[in-house]
Image (tube, rainbow over all chains, first blue to last red; front, side, top):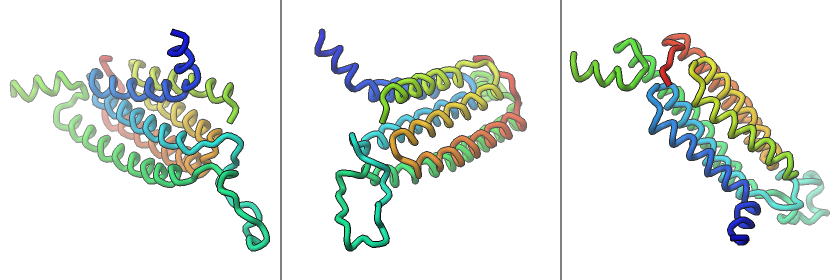
Length: 131
Length: 81
């Protein structure tokens, strides 16, 4: 029991990321409104991005900008003193892609509203079944 | 990374996320989602990912909120859940 408790407290950030992902997944599956589903999709995406960025964090390291960059020949660059920048660069692309996805999803929601005059999923399905 | 600050902001992120999907008003959901994005941006600045933090502040919190508000303006604020 104590081992499990220590595992939860030591890795508290991972448990909170999983909680955020489950909030987003719940909104995608269980919510009835289309805009709420899109909000849930974005929460899921940012939770995954948060997990990836948190992998690169090191204890006692600084932001990944090289000190003494202009006379670099006289100073040795130690990689252990800098946070790993590779996950940051990958997740920068993911943020931009998520905004593009959000724009397309909202346009589809607006077109759906113009055709069915509602954003609720059950009312749209009822109108499709009984025209 | 200061773990007290990290835990505080993570709690605020979870509260804003739950609020954004629970509130019964789509404009309120859009604004709460903007608050969620800004908290996320703070979290990344704490983790040392400054480039990701300012991209999220401009693109995630700014442009996403504008998209949501304009989508709500073109449709309706009413929601059942």
